[in-house]
Image (cartoon, rainbow, N blue to C red; front, side, top):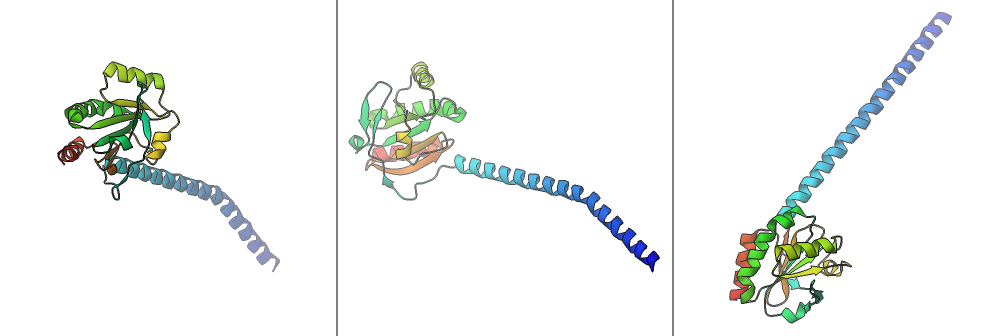
Length: 200
């Protein structure tokens, strides 16, 4: 009987030791699995953001543009309400945004093609952008439209606080936001819509 008890005790001790030896391995395996899952979820989230940012989309429904006043780097103030009757393009950008800088020549060309017919364009620098860099860029590139420094982020908040640059809002002649472009701009689509507004 005593021998049997000793054998059971020995088996119990060995089982406990085996469990103790395997426990760290299981913990490491669980930690690795958790890290892999977090990495996969993070990559999926980044891909989703990139895809959504690259797609222009219609506003859910045309909605009134904010009735705000924008002051350009020359100190001239313009109210969106006063521009009623003509299309307006409001573009949020920054000097640290590579896609913004890459598409700037297209934005300049678009403005020049339609400005005489009534298009007004505002390039609103994000509040985190350095004013000296914005001013230098506007001066050296000879930007032909109104460049706005949004020091307090008030313009951005009025437009729903866009988080991605570039983001563009097309406002029709009735003062309604009819198209929003987030990320790289589809200039062919934008060109057609502006031409239709001016013809309209």
